[in-house]
Image (cartoon, rainbow over all chains, first blue to last red; front, side):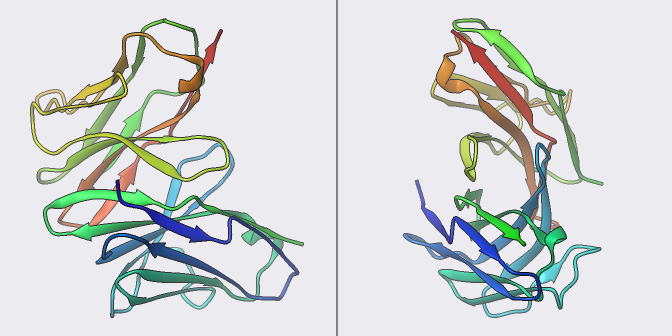
Length: 116
Length: 112
């Protein structure tokens, strides 16, 4: 199946710094990418949906200025957590769709962010 | 609105037991339905899918049938293995909203 690579898999940063997470579709063009946040033993919370070349659509309650999403190409989307705080510590997962009639999404491996 | 409800876990079974994880949904339009599996510390992997009513998705011994009349997509496996221990998510995708809706996840523990 299609492969989505997410990097880094783990990152520890200090409060107040920014962290960038990359999500790449390795063998297909992703017209739509999704960013999720997952709390321990909980389901995935959709943060935003991004389409290549356009601004991301954020879910209600997600701060646009804190979680910057860029989908600059059909194979790359990035999530930047700005001015990170300990409460931003979480597991972040991206997924990508090829679009059209193919409805399935392929997921990255996830990034464990710890803010100290 | 769109939503997915799946049975609470954890589900604990002995090896070779029969597995059922219930999933029901509400949706506008005609969603596609999925089961994803998540192993500890990893992202989600597609297990199986069905895109229209009466379709049966199957993979690695797992099966689920898209039942429009009962709005269900229950996951079944005839004989589970220890390696099936993971968290299973039921999900739907709608074109209308171009996004996925996930259930809360069901943790499966299979004991030898």
